[in-house]
Length: 211
Image (cartoon, rainbow, N blue to C red; front, top):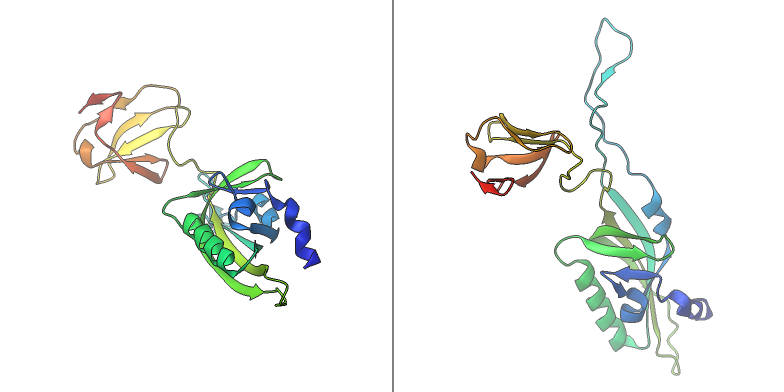
């Protein structure tokens, strides 16, 4: 048990949606959090090998990236079995809630957006003694971290393209400029996109004026 008693300093190191995971759930990360710092794997770009040319022609204009999975070795520490199950259930209920969850690592000085993917290899490492009620359970936790290289929504500094359901360009907005309306045909059925990446459905408002 001495190995895990040293984790008393684990408070104020990990936060789930602003909640200290060690103080609230007895949860701590033992290994693996450095994976949050890695750069995500790039997806294959469109390419073509022309018979009459050397090498391949590849489109490098709009790089896209794979989802980044982070595998953590974790531990729950609880004073007894009742507290262990209560903390475990509360932790996974918060982590697996709908939407992205905010995972803050104090050592990184950063908060990541994540969602729960899976957990496995649960192992009770506590030696059951008559005088020892503490529960220590190690396990592996897999999270998917958001790809922060591609914005989730357009900003004033991004070019914006709005197309109708048939892909016809309706509106363009160069960076820092106002909207240029080319057509309002089927505008209510259009989608907002940045490059080839579609974003939220258009609600039919341009500069606050209904179409």
